[in-house]
Image (cartoon, rainbow, N blue to C red):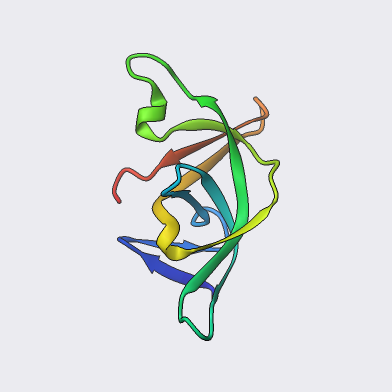
Length: 107
């Protein structure tokens, strides 16, 4: 399975459409998607990104806007598409050697 429509956006296994915020408030980078034969559910397989800290504190803490500095070291996990809350964007700034996730503004 290459892509799925989720709410008003497209999710794929490739950047920039492969990062989501889950209902449990964890972020995930999608590596693979497949449909279960018996239940017809869509399984999403990927890696959690570890949330380090909010991007900014002022004028409001960015955690309330679902914006965080992250790192990529975590194991592979499997979820269902029903566990996804919203699509996110992953930004890696090479010069700073830092990574961030931010929500799409139009979803």
